[in-house]
Image (cartoon, rainbow, N blue to C red):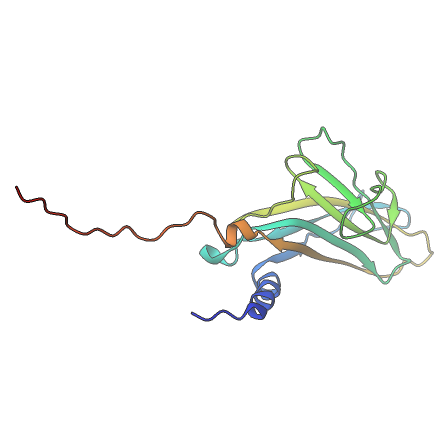
Length: 182
């Protein structure tokens, strides 16, 4: 079987484009049914890796890119949970998660959110059949007359090469009769 390595690269992007569903919940104002100036709101982002069924692959280094477009109508409020929490969520200004994370509730237009149920230092994993949801917050701007913007979300992830290419695999066992005469 001939394998064109360039096809593997395209297959990874195709998998993320077609087999991982990313969704945003309804936006919920802190009070009432409509979002008023300076009011906080909540929403959640979900990544679902179950669409591919038995062909799903494990994703690691999962991070959520959340931004407002256009900017100026509202702000996102950065999450930042303590490392001792059961679920660790931190936001950074870059997709590598390097540098100092945003402080809790820091107002930003764009952030890369890292989420882990274990510890922040371990890879963020989205296993086959898994669905992860992160609750996030924002605040409406203060401009009179309001305005409109979009919350945009995408995930960035790496395929788990150990899952795709398992080590220490073996061939089927074969046998040959051995007869001893005597």
